Figure (cartoon, rainbow, N blue to C red):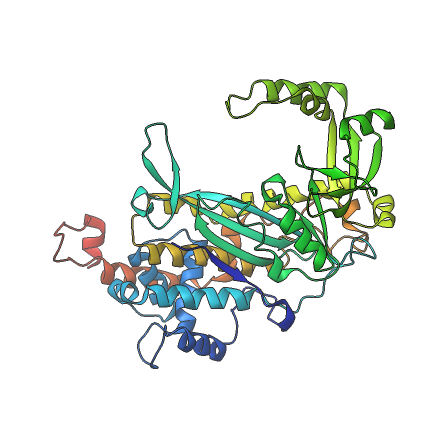
Amino acid sequence: MDYQLYTSSVAEATDTDPTLSSFIDPERLSQLARQSKFQQRDRGKITPSLFVETITKAAFQQASSFRHLAVLGGNQINGTIAKQSFWERVDSRAVKFLGSVLCEQMVTGLVLPQPIHDLIDRALVHDSSILKLHPQLQDAFPGSRNQNATPQSSVRVQVVADLLSGEFLQFGISGFTRNDQAASHDILPVIQPKDLVLRDLGYFTLDSLEAIDRQEAFFLSRLRYGTALFNEEEERIDLVTSLREAACEEGESCFIKARMGARKKLPIRIVAVRLPESVANERRRKARADRDKRVSHDKAYYELLGWTLLVTNLPEEAINDLNLTKLYALRWRIENIFKAWKSGLKPGHLSAHKSNKWHLHCLLLGQMLALSRLSRIGLFTIVNDSKPNASQTIINHSEISLFKAIDILLLCDSAIDQTALCHQVVEQILYHGRYEKRRREPLPASIAKLA
């Protein structure tokens, strides 16, 4: 399957209901459904609003089969829906419709918290996570191969989030084989002037860094070993020699003004922090134990392992005011978000589900819609507004406001009285527990009594 990118329209931010009660206006959903040809006439039980809500609730409740979708949809209309009806609606048009809804859902009118610096409005983190899928889907979502060269199926989910507001700005869905370097340019449509982009070495390409700089935004990244560096006179900089001459003590930082790239000559500043000898030796030990035969580390590489090397296009005044190592450490906040996603919504359950690519894509979009819905109420922001010192910059915050009990949140969101709940459960069992022609298996005794 081709790479699918879902990007928020940052230029058209609109006010939305900051709760979990509903998505965008039903009339707008109908308009998007007609544009994607998901709905070509106003008839049937599965309306655009019902379809979106069902797919999203399926993510919350770890439901994946068409029968699960039918039960969830039936509960919303206090009736029943045949699973065949959902099977008929889940196709390329449904994927296009849900993608358009996701793009609109990421457009909000939330007021951003106080910026981390006068020069920086947003802190954007770009990272990816891998989900294993059923091997049957390896043509649509190609994965890696094991030692026996057996084809696997995996999906790579690219995420761009603003750490200040906790908002998601972009999602990307592809097979495992499209790596982070290939996705390094995906973030460009959501970047605005005065944004700060935090990414790991997997996204390090001179072309993407130059593109970020052209958009009057900033980047902060680890420096890839072997990158050509030049001074103002365009003479090659020997980084090892420069750091030796700086003679920084353990924990101290030194700054080097340079131009990066043999052809690009991108103006940057290198921030080098001297590591404790014990940490440096451990990094060298791991490097020597690297079993990749393609890797051949030289003496300069091992010496540079004694430093944390960051590269940025931030102006000098920002570098002096900010602790860039702590600022770069905020990139790990995305791992907290991934952990909350995988432990709360449990997307890993999709790995045991064998279905067609459109069904899987819809379920993945349901996961994205669920995350976007949670972000609207500030569950992923790193600024806790309930604290008296919430006006401070995020550099002074050591906590992240993550909602771990997402299952409880779901119960609060869809709570109904017990009598109605029991009635709905019995009704769904009676409808979906009937015999099927293709597989005549007796019903369990407990369900048979209810029938």
